[in-house]
Image (cartoon, rainbow, N blue to C red; front, side):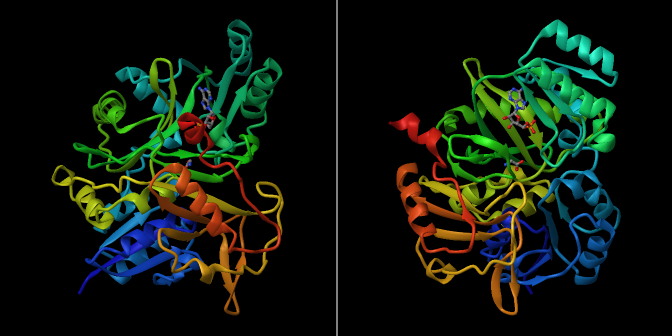
Length: 427
Ligand code: AMP
Ligand code: GLY
């Protein structure tokens, strides 16, 4: 009998994780909770929400799941790993206290400053008047961050003072993110290009992936509001593999040591959101999970068996593992519902997917789509990501945008310029 794997979550990232895990010869069955149309191609989807951690533990127990893999941050911050461990159920991800690296900006900043990890200078405030006084003293640009999780909406980059005052008021007076707004971090504005570096770690060994970059704004040229991510590509030439050692030695390793000094061991994937300026990479944020949509560009380039990497991480034998990467480039473009990240319609028929399913080096990762009487229809803002792999970023771009021409649904919207930062660099 092969292994049974439970994937927690319902986005493009989780479909991509499931797709990669399903290629492992060791894996026999994939269950997802709650899953989506794409995950239903790989196995059973059980309608339990990603935040219902007790019900997920019952499911893993009943199904005798060999390893549970968690996609989103909320269940990690809520202690899904602690709960599973208490019940003797193997799970991949950091414990509740380790997940505070993402769930509390103040905690992350304290660990980084204690260990001298390069990041923006900062102060913490819970008092409105003191925060305003600090803004007046320092002057903008400044960045104001709610301490806790805020579904990606907790960060205000304030070029003008008015915007900074407003963010302080929204957090410390109106508590727009509830208890996540109790404290704020006010930090220095960092200039440079953003890049993501994601690594596996069992607490001792750190095995980095290749670099990647996501495109968070909704419109071309990085205009308009932030979204969950409109596309990604890997590797990112702003952070070539020669710099990986720097990120591991100066960022990931001291951060893990800082956690250890607090009695916290970190296991899982650690995501560094970095900005590369004149003086090298600095940390904008940590996430305690795979990035979405970076995963959809990274895993198609991973030649090694992801399930074996995850098993080694959970079992504390990552030192035995070396990950092999395809030398080519991957690009993922997200097809969204018109209007996203604002209001959008759902239930639109999706046509043309069958034209892609057998195209070489083209992959489809479903996010917000479901089956309605056998027809695939849109059900979310980000409907799916299409990834193409080719010899370089130019060719990957051509291949992915050609592939997209096959897909149709009413209101389809996607960015036309994913990868432009890499492309400008080579031109
Ligand atoms: P975070 O959730 O902390 O990554 O912040 C969301 C976005 O805000 C980042 O992707 C950056 O574009 C921007 N940001 C965060 N911190 C800073 C900073 N110190 N300087 C400039 N931009 C920042
Ligand atoms: N792509 C950014 C994130 O996953 O938070």
